[in-house]
Length: 426
Image (cartoon, rainbow, N blue to C red; front, side, top):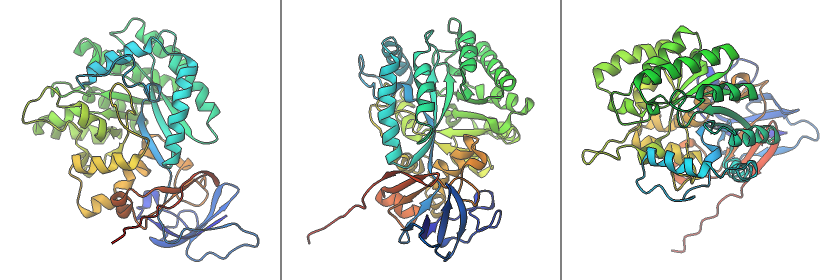
């Protein structure tokens, strides 16, 4: 297949497109040749091969596939079951989920998740990191997601994080459940230090998870300091373990909303450690804007981590959806454009270059978070996975909520949408 007249975004040397391995292609209208599910050539005006299928992009934007770096698929589509989260807080959401968790079945989880994954696919998402609650002695949701990971592998890559929603040290048999999850074949281990009973338990849980991940060769993704308490400082422990154990880019700190409340003197000192650690961060601007600041009157905090400062320091940051129609978020779809759009406003990243580069939060940055390596990117020799948007630029796509016209995975069409036709009668 030959994709012609495609517009590529400005890409830096680390994630550039290439006409030959390692050689960057200038932004603008280019062609992309796909052979046996792999990018065989990328460059201007590639000659057509006899019998080759041609897709004319018409100057529209081609991006690598969207990457969902943080979601809870096990809880999707459960909002109001058995009752709604009336306070809108994180902690009532945990209580409501504990109620719903008691009625989980493998069939129930698979049916809901399958619906949402199909929805995500329509929005061009091909890679998903999901946190799955393992504070359930039966590990029902984990069983379901492990099955779906294999069943849907042709269409979407699902990474599973063993997530101890009710704690590790503060939950009966919490350590044993994490070890069982590791034995069952999860991709990453998580923790929730701000929900542990004590500061000592928080540190102990992080030490346990990092050591176990290092021993098993797994990734780490921690719900870290998702609270408005500036005294919640699990992040410094996680970063220290990532640095000392050499885990670096295999470690992700998700949420880190307490950082929004850290005093600047402490943050400045902390930033040095975060940079040294080489770890990743995931912000969830839609849901955390909804959940955080609930105990404030005024002034009321946004409650989203310091995306701008981290990015300027060279720390990798991506954006995630977090929740879709569940006890923590009664709304939502799998459209990562909505997440970026909200995130730019909430984090005050509305300079022109910040807007045009913001696709990275849900593509290349997120791929780095998931540790996808050579399995991702618009580069010769890599899998021919890409999305075609009904816009000539990412700036235009954000403004007009441009649909994904086509999503290709390893050269195979996964989802398509007809271009929107608008008619104004005056």
